Structure formats: C-alpha cells, structure tokens
Length: 463
Image 1 (cartoon, rainbow, N blue to C red):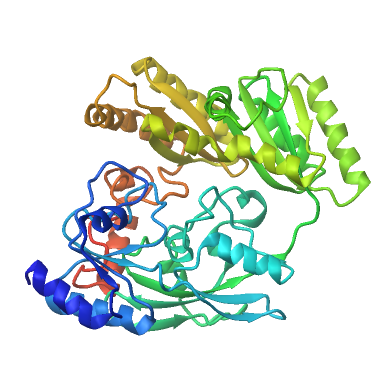
Image 2: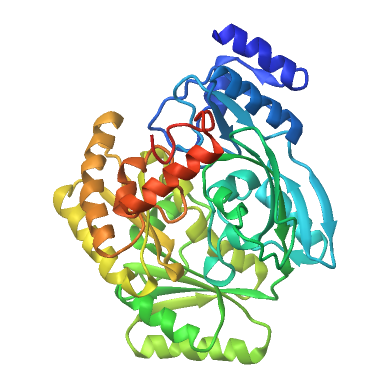
C-alpha cells in the first residue's frame, strides 16, 4: 500500500481527527528520549478503545503494515522509535481509570493513564501506587509495563511487574485476551500476562491493566550521606538494613550532583564534599526508628564510611533532598549523554562499578563520566557526556566501542546490559551478553507465536 492509501484507511478505523501526518507531529510522536535514530513514521494514529486497537492490528496484518506503540515517549532504548515508515499507535486518548475496588485494592486503567495520574488516584482513595521515577509526570502505564519499569522504590516494592493483577491485550495476530482478571491466586498453567510485561510491545499491545495498590507509607524521611569511598555504599546499606526497612537506597557521584547544583534552585545538602553520596528513605513511624537511624548514622561516621550527612525534618525538606537525585538526568541532558543501564547482584556493585569506571576513563580520558542509580537493587546508570567539540555521530560511534568493554565486564559479573530501560534498538546488538543463545531462540519462537507476520514493533529486541 502507498502512504496515501494507508492514511486513508487509518482514518476509517479511529475517530475523526485522530490520524496525524503533519511533519512536526511525526517527529514528536515518532521518537522517545533517545536521539540516535531519526523518526520517520508515515502517520500517527490515536485509538480510544481496545476494539479500535484490534482493528488497527487486523489492518496491519492484512496489508503488512508495521505498527509501533507510543506511550509517554520517555524510553531510553529506542523501543518506541518509528524509524522505518511505520504507523505509530499512540495511547494518549486511552487515558481513563475504568474501575476501582477499595476492598480488593485494585484499579483498572487504560494504557494511556499517566503514572502520576495513577499515583494521585491512589492517594485520593487513601492508598498508594509505589512504582515511581523521575518521568512519572509524563510516562504512561502501558509503556511502564511494556518495559517493566523499576525506578526509585524497587528495594522495597519491586518492579512494575509485581503490581500487575491483570491485563487486557491485543496480540500481534489481532486477538483480544484478558489475562488473569485481577486474581491473587490463579494456578492454571502459563501466566501469559508476564510475557507482555517487559516485551516492549513486540508481542502485541497492552490496552488495559488492573493494578494492585498498597497502604500509603507513613512519614517518609530522607537521609543523604557523603561517602568516603565507593565501597562504603555497601557498608552503609548493610548496616541500615539490619535495623530499618528502607523504601529507597540511591547513589550519585559528586560530578552528578555538581550538574544539578549548576542548574540552580537546589542547594548542596551540606558543606563537606564527598566523592559519592547515598540517599536513604524510610518510614519514621516512631521516635524509636528515628533514634535508630541517628545511631546508625553515628556508627557509619565512626567507622569512617561517612563524611557528613543530613536528615529531613519535614516533607518539604525530604522532597528537596530527593531533587539532588531526581534532577540528574534533566541537568545532564544538554550534554547529549550516552546512557547505559546496568545491573549486577547488590554485593558485586562496588567492584563492578570500579572496573567499568577504570576502563572508560583509561580509553577516553576526555569523556566526563556521570554515575548514579538505584544501588540498593544493583542498578547503575553509566552516563558518558559528549564533549562540546565532538560531533554527535562521532561521539556515538566512540561510545559503541566503550560498550564492548563495558558489556564484557557485565557478562563476567553475570549482570544485565539493561536493568530497567529495555532493549529496543540501542541494546539489541548486545542482547547476547546477558541472554544465552538458547534463551534468545525461545524468545524468537514466542514472538513468532504472537506476531507471525512481524507487524508489531518490528526490529526491537532483535531483528
């Protein structure tokens, strides 16, 4: 089919005005936060119902038209980039909360519900949706589930996968399936919802999700510590976890914090400079827990692991301390960072990070390296910043050489080349560093079952 024929047919499958072809719209909806692949979609289409999504998938199969899902477009692996004339299926208008049961603590949402919208709904009903990250104000639930997003609370609450009680999906063949239907116990064979969670839209489209909610945490308190050495991150973590259940344990380098401070509005947590910082969050539900926290802080100081620290005295101060961590990505964005999202088991983090930092620094001493991440669950974000005098294309090419050395270390540590950002197009050449040949073969076979004509997000995860 020609582009004109595709566009004309799309207009018959969705509501009036819900097909866009303006170049500015194609650029906006055809990409995510990566800037490596230029977007080249043929059209953007906005379904409003699962039936309309099914009609789009049926059309795609009958005419061999490729479809790319688009949520909040906050992804970092080009999983939602339409670079080869695909039709982008954007879920912005499927943004309704459909059902809620207070007794079951379950809420059913369309895929386009924004993360913060779900968080606010839970709070309005005296409950809590704990999956959280810096893009909560724009990321959409369908995209979160398609990448099994993690974020800052994983140490206590787990990944997105852990909060999914049921899914409604349209498979790559065009079948509508309702998976698990909110059941806490359903031991009847394969649980197919977990295939769609983390599949990056390659098996079909998530159109609705039934999500679990939790008790709202009480008096969340933040402690920021300046660490003497990288290995002290584990010393501090082990010390605190013996007595306190942490809701978050983050870390960032001094260089990362300097970029945040340079943007203004945020102040350094204390006068003492440290090479690394840890941010701990916990529920201070009693004076005893606060006393325990202060005692543990003093113990870490006496052991030489911590140089200085500050503890929040109010919700406002806690939010401000969180900004030191959450504004890092925003502050380094103008420097065109090349991002790697890595993970190992928690105990191996210090050695793993030191090896990678040494390799990158040795081979590219002129590159500025920014480290931060969810160190409490073994997830590290390596950000290499582009020098001002280096063209973007040359910079990305050099970073590909860095990847080989970095991922060799990842494989040796039995880690992951993508902890929470997905594979998309940017990581698919490196999938074998984490997955065996047998695993990849089974993954390809699963793709063939659900999407035999390869019309759903082709070229993502693998070719």
